[in-house]
Structure formats: structure tokens, C-alpha cells
Length: 201
Image (cartoon, rainbow, N blue to C red; front, side, top):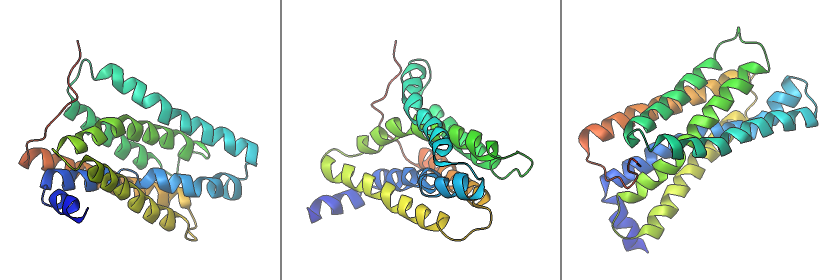
């Protein structure tokens, strides 16, 4: 088992992609941890109303992969992933706009951010695993481990006693998406990535 992870750590494209894509989950995990406090305690909605907002956000997570399966037939993978990361950055930036009235300052941008994250996740996970020839189980485990470690950090940050958690959530999204885009562009510049997701007919 130790040998499997040592081989993975000697594979720069795999490690860089796994760490880069793990960062994308930061705003989503922060939203999961902090949304009830934001909607119920800060904005004054009841539990049922919060459920509607949360359910609407969850719908974006379900719809996005379906959209991806359609657009990948016409467009290359790498530009689509770049667009998804840019979408996360733009959505997070909207949460930093105080002139947008509540609850739309969080509901609409977070829907767009969740859609962009979910749109990128299936192909990004596949792209990570395409970089290894063996030890697929260890590669998959480390990939998921990365998501949960960054997610745990995000949940801890948003759970602190912030005065304006929507702004904090926005900054978490901006930093995470900005780091992801920068790392993604550098990885594509310096490494040749294997791709199994091809354009369809």
C-alpha cells in the first residue's frame, strides 16, 4: 500500500491535478456548513423556507452533469473545464456585491457556483485518474481524500463567528477558484495530459 502511494507521489500530473481540483470544493463545503446559519439565523427564514433554498441549490448539482454530457459532444474538454472554473470565480465574485439584496446575493451566485462545480467534477475526476497506469484504487482514494480535507478546512472557516458570512463565502470561492484557474493553466502549459473524454459524434 505504501508503495502505491509512493508511486503516485512521483507522478507530477496526477498530484498537481488532484490537489488543484480538490480546492474547487472549498466554497461548496463552506456553503453546506454555513447555509443554515445564513438563511435561518442571519436572514430570518424558517426551516421549511431554508429547505427550498437548499433544495434549489442541490438541483444545480444534478442538472450540471447532464448538461456536460451534451456539450462535450461539440466542444473539447480542456476549454470546457476552464470555462467551468471561470464560472465558479464569477459566481463567487457576485457574493461580494453588497448591492445585491438578500437572499439573492447568496441564492443565485451559489446556484451558479454549484452548477459550475458539478459541471467540472465528472470530467476532472476522470482526467485525474487518466494520469495513472496502475494503483487506480489508491489514486481514487487520495483524490477523494483531497476533496474532504479541503472541505473540512472550508467548513471550519465558515463556522467561525463572522459578521457577514455571505462575504466570507464569496471570498472563499474567489480564492479557491482563482487558485484553481491559475494552477490549471500552468498544468496545461507544462504537462501533456492524457484524456479519455473525447468529442462525440
